[in-house]
Amino acid sequence: MKEYDVFIIGSGMAGMTIANKCASKGLKVGITDELPYGGTCALRGCDPKKVIIGATEVRDFAKRLKGNGIDTIPNVNWKDIMSFKQSFVDEMPPKIEKGYKKNGIDTFHNSAKFLSQNTLEVGNNKIKAKKIVIASGSKPRVLEFEGGHFAKSSTDFLNLEELPKSLLFIGGGYIAFEFAHIAARCGAKVTIVHRGKSPLENFEKDIVKHLVSATNKLGIKLILETEVTAIEKVVSHYRVLGKSQDKTEYFEAEAVFNSAGRPPAIFDLNLDKANIAFTQKGVTVNNYLQSTTNPIVYSAGDAADSEGLPLTPIAVLEGHTVASNIIKSNHKKINYPPMPTVVFTLPTLASVGYTESEAKERNYNIRVNYKEVGGWFNAKRLNVEEYAFKTIIDEDTQTILGAHLIGPHTEETINFFAMAIKTKMKVNDIRTMVFSYPTLASDIPHML
Image (cartoon, rainbow, N blue to C red; front, top):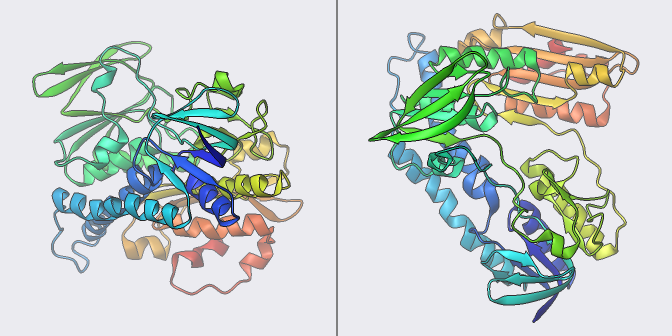
């Protein structure tokens, strides 16, 4: 039996933060992950994805300016992209493990299962700990229908040695849209099949419709209100069965990808043996991110059923909170700032704060500014068709409640709105600021 002050399941950003912070205070810490150290973001998500997007951004920019100073649209070399991406991914796990060992943290590379409230089975080891942290992240939803196992994961997409000529994505969330845009810009034929009435259901509908328009213009086939019920392998491709209210359709593609959501990776941990309550969204936690039913257990990141969005910066925030509560014994309640989210398509869609419907549900006295601004200078100089915004203003306090943007580099502009919401900046104070011009940020006063 190995004994620890703190043992952590999962070595993503939440687990890494907790492990290093607790070890720095002299606690005996152990950590395990059945996957390479680094977590989804660094190895299988946002970081490698953004590297790949970089090449498609160059092509998109050149295409928009062809005839306006650019003569040739470059081709995307998929193998070169993969090689460049892998240079970032490969260095992470050994770098992280080296850091753990430097900090005196014991490392394991096995799955974990609870044996009792304070003991775990980790590979061939039995672990007893004063505090246990579940930071195991999330994983692709299992497709229960016939042939569901034929669908590849988002990780598989990021590791494709060659890009298939045709791809189908199941689900209409941000993963499907981001990867579909990448593939289409690299010359593939792409289809998205989504069971809902509209895609990207958690984002502002008036802004999503502009992304749908851009997606259609890119040649991506977007099929709505259709549920995939089977996948069949036919020689060198796959036949996908989709059922809607009034018809059954077959779609064909060389590769099918499961982008139907990512539930928390907690259901194989034997949580019942440790008296840990959980939901389909994760481990049930209180404001200290402590299990509501087993006080020695904490959870952070995508594994926790908290109010935080499944975003890397939120995992880090929750990690700091858990570590602080382990070190100083539950003195810090989690406090979420405005959480900006981005769909890294081209154009990018970015959002922070309340949507219009959310603000109305909370009975705010609001003013809504919504406008398509493809005629603004910043859109015209970049030859961008889709540029729009919707801002929600609290009329009583004259502060911003929400901002929703689509257009060039909105992934950067949205951070200013997040800061303005957090600090409760008055709308008039923002309007009277002097912004550098011509920049995308110089459009912000005109959005209020």
